[in-house]
Amino acid sequence: MTEQPLDTFRSSTLGWLRGTLAGLGTGLLLVLGIVLTVAGVGVAQTGITWLPLLLTLAALVILAVVWVKNLAATYEITEERLIIRTGILFKAVDEIELYRIKDVRLNFTLLNQWAGIGTLSISSSDETTRSGDLVIPHVASAQARREHLRRLVDTARQKRQVREIDMAHEHI
Image (cartoon, rainbow, N blue to C red):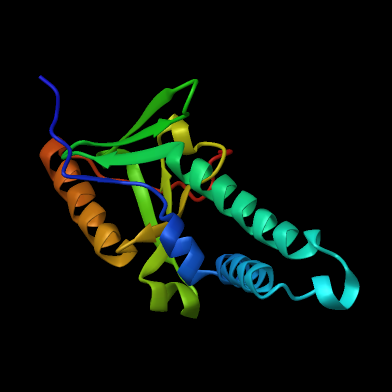
């Protein structure tokens, strides 16, 4: 019997475009390239016909790279697990048992807040996060997702009757 997902999400390309300086810069580059192409600016003054097209192409390439990167990872939350599905051609599935999650941190900038996105950082005692936190950038409704995940972690711990204990001196 497979668990039904309570939430499925991925990093938001639209959120990245609206809520980061890199995204806003890419959007500006795209608009500038299109406007210059349509207006024919640069051709009359300099004879350079390819510059506006190059700006547009550069913005579209950046946008495509971010979109494919965001498409390559999906996150699914069930009552007992956080499931991470990565890859497009070569896929991998990893899981973090919710009761093993130590902390769910939310980071966001002023721009992120306006765009309604944030970055979730998850640390756990699971092998998935041994080398560092699982970082999920540009998550739509990040604050609500963090709170939902935190409640599910607490419920999973109560169900299994476990507690998270931090060892201050692990070398002892």
